[in-house]
Image (cartoon, rainbow, N blue to C red):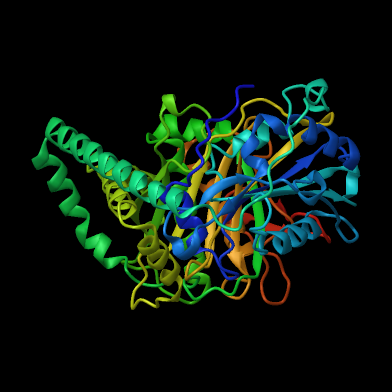
Length: 522
C-alpha cells in the first residue's frame, strides 16, 4: 500500500472543522462495522500497530500558534500509544442491535481529545449471535469520507490472512512537542496559505468561465433562474431544525445496491439521485408525523462533493465542496419525485453551484488565519431568522468486495456524518459488498424519534422499487434495531410485502421483539 501524501499545514477546510467544533457539535466522521464473529482485542491491536506506519498522520497531533497567527499544523506525537486509541466496550444484554445503537450513540456524542491523534476505535463485545463490531471515529480535520479509507485499508484486509499483523518496522522516537510552533513559521504558513488560496480562486474562476461559456451561458442562467423561487421558498425550519445539545442518537438501515442501480437504469439519474429521492420522501413523512404540512414546502439538502483529483492520490485532509439543492416534499408519487430530484440536481450541476461554493471557500481561505478562526467559531452562536439548510446528506462509494478484520468478515458498514448547530439530523450512505447502508445521526434533544425517520427510509425505498417495477430479490430492505410504532406501542408500516408484493394497504406489522426487527405480514 502506497502511503498517503502529507503536508504539515492544515488546509482552510481542515482547520474550519477545528474552529467550528464544540461539545454541542462533535465533528468526526465515523462508522459502525459489524462482523461475522467477535474481534479478538489483542490480535486487533497488534494488527493495527503493525501497519499504522503506512499512515503517519495517525501518529500526529494538531498544534495551533499563539493568537491564531498562522494555520494549525500537524506534529509528531512523541507519547503516542496505540492503546490510547483502541478501546474495549461491552454492550448490555441481550446484545442486540438496539443495544449496539445505544452504545454507538453515546460514543459518537463525545468530542475527541485534541491532545492526542484525532482517531479512535472501539472494539465491541457482548453482541448476541456470536458477532463482533467496531466503532471507528476519525476527526473531520484529519480526513473526509474518501481519504478516511486510508485507515480502513490498514484496519481491514481483502482476505482473512491479510487482515492479521505483519512484520512491524522500527519507528524512530519522535521529538518532544513544543507548546506552539515558531512565530516565523506561523507567519510564513499564513502567507503561503493566502497565496495558494488566491491562486486556487483564480483557477476556479477561469474554470467556471470556460465551463459556463462552453455549455451556453443563457441556458445555465435560465435553468437556475427557474429554481430561484424554490430556493427562496425553502428557507424555513423543519421539525429537526432546532438548536442542538450534543447528545446523539444513531440508527441505521440497509438495502440492495443492485436494486438501487436497477432503479437508476430504469428511471434515469444517478445512485445519489435515488438516495436523495428516498430520503426526501422519508422526510416528508416525518414532517407530517409532526403535524406539519408538506404542501408547497421544500427540504434544502446540502450534498458534499469531492474535489479529489487523480493526482491527489491518497492524500489526507478534505478535498470537498458542497452542493445545495431544494427538493419538493409534496410529491407523493415515487417516480415523479425521483425525476424531480434528477432535474434539480442536473440544473445545479450545470450551473456549477458547487464550484461557486468552492470559490467562496478559497476567498475565505485567503484571509488571515485569525479572521478564519473568528468567523468559524462564531457561526454556532448565531441564530438566524431562517436556516441556510435543513440537512446534510452524503454518499460515499465504499469497497465492492468483502473485507476482513483479524480473520472476521465484515457484514455491514453503517456510516456516520456529524451534525449540530440547528441541523438536528444528518444522513450518510455508503456502499459495500453489494449493499447500500444508511446511517442517521440525530441530536437526542431535537430528534429523539429519529428511528421513525429511518423506518420511513425503508418504506420509501420499497415504494420506489415497486413503482419502478424492479423484480424482487428476496428481502430487499432491512431496518436497524426497532420498527415504527404508535404511541401505544403497536407497530405500523405502510410498505409492500418483500415476497408477495401485497400492496401497502393490505399489510400489518408484527411488533419486534427486544433487539429484533419488525416483519411485514399479509
